[in-house]
Length: 367
Image (cartoon, rainbow, N blue to C red):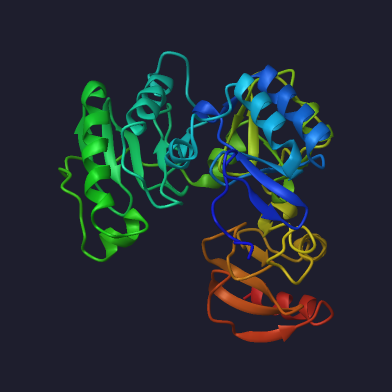
């Protein structure tokens, strides 16, 4: 029996409706030009030319053939995009702020964390880290369980769900993180924020709050980001940018290190297509009984600014795990409508068809 729905890696790919799905976790959430070019060639030669930008600053290769895995792994290893084994790969869920600057200490922190994780306990599949130590905080809304941030000139180690964190010296931060991971591994929880909400709180000193973050829409407008609707790109689209190093982001966008531009990417963060999340749906995902992205494109024009629509092929909600103003969840070839909830939330309406949906949407998204 085929198991569906785990968090894939490059060493532990997941079967999907269009072949194997490999998730690549670039070091420091960054692809240098050779790595970008190499991934384009791998996708074209051994996949189906489709790639996904993930919400944790990762990149996924789609449609990889099982017989091609040894060669794909060999090429990823040559590009320094492959971990030594699946257990190390699963622990190395590190999201790096795209707004780091040379000499600000961010890249060194990531390298130290990667080394520390070699000796860490095994962690739940979605457990992750955010290194948010750029000039301005940007990742406080992104999914992570342990965060390294700034409080003025100091580094701050904070557990997700806690408003305040512990001031740490760079040399001592990794030892404290390992202590925190060993504690978490023994507490039987899946995510840090849920543990904290349940009153299972780590022994961190509440020294300070992190520097306040500007509203996310302001951050996205101020940066020269290139967005991919639904995070979906083709090898051809990615190839347009591979002359520059690319910093991956949790917003399904890339930040080129240079002046790369392409008409194939969106530059306006208020574009209607960026108000909609949608997974690949059927037939690309075996868990989905509905097509998703064509419907999402059709509905994007009626989504007002400041609202978000999620079209999910099933109740897992891979494209947008958080609640949305309106979520359409596929079930047995039709859609359930969830208000202000995630894909697996309680539906307000069930069994909708594509014909029913636009009029329903206008009422709920405008309210």
